[in-house]
Figure 1: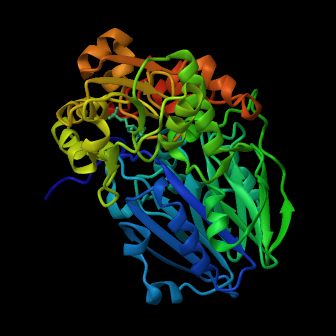
Figure 2: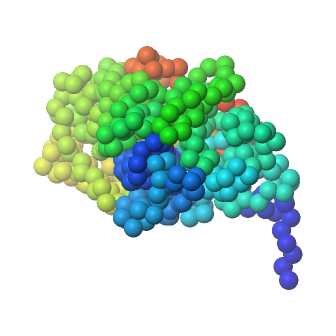
Figure 3: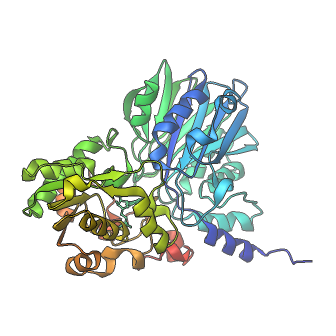
Length: 483
Ligand code: AMP
């Protein structure tokens, strides 16, 4: 018989398998048939995660029912599954596909029954001490069902020695380091919190006398909710039957650091984030980029969809016509998530195709939001030349990505980031471009100054929250330790 794994062996498996969390969350309280609204909310947050989706509905007796699975929101849910999630309290989650895998068992919300009743958690962000906490909990006898950070929160709640649920929530959250914007239910009381640096977004809205929480304002628009405000960094709230109470805030951080990459790439342009419109922020990045890296050309072409707004800004500022010279097939997944380089090149072909009539015989400026591994740009340069472009000038509406993210954006290791080891001339040559220009860090931050200060660690290497697991050498190879 195979020997039972030791705690150390279990830990190793957990580490290798640990997913990167890029997610979207929603929460509803005091809204009849809340699960239906959660479905719609998640539908509009689909860009924040395509691997798995889940909804928990909590009925008037505090009984939580969950339906979750792998796939898009529209694949996971149908009228029948949603109708079973009864109650006026609901929370939902979409999860991004990850390098670490994990599969169905990592789908959220996580649900458990403990001393105070049914508990559910929907979490966006990466805890930087999840492995540390997990090791301690496992040593203490905890059994984990998934490899995701958020299950740690469930165990911390269940093991808290405090009397009331409010105190247990406070206690559990006080152990967490890193990034978390989460919605949690105990019975039909909903709690919501943002870590004290405020890495990931979480907004509060109202709907027909009830309350709504969501990662982005586009989720309010789809359900007809009214945006009230962003949850403040470190804020913890409790909502029951649609009535909100403020709880004791978390220990304040030395400085707030919402993620600037949400504005660069991740959020939807029709959302407002950190008090600014994502579309306006991207346009401003594009304008700034045009000022920093002008070039003579016939047209400006966005890499759809994430660079549409920044390319518009570039075109407006430079006076060079904006052209839709590249088509994106919306029915394939993001190429970034393909596991090997070979697949990623193929992915670009599957996803993008130039419009020959637009680019043939033209000097073109191609604007993208970011350069990560450089695979997309390399393929695009090739495609544009094959379609007749005489010059291909690449403009990137953010600075070089040089460092992995440990707070919830899926980035490859430092070695795989093209901007970490090569200068602009080398990258330009490697990608087969006539010229390359990145937006400067100062230019980017200056364009959205009113919403800062930000976490810009992926560009600057300045990590605002302690990287507990990394410092202990406990982060899987593909995340790369911070040097
Ligand atoms: P790459 O081909 O690796 O240089 O990736 C750059 C492209 O991936 C850009 O067009 C971005 O829109 C997109 N991108 C940037 N960051 C991410 C991310 N964390 N997840 C998925 N796609 C991303």
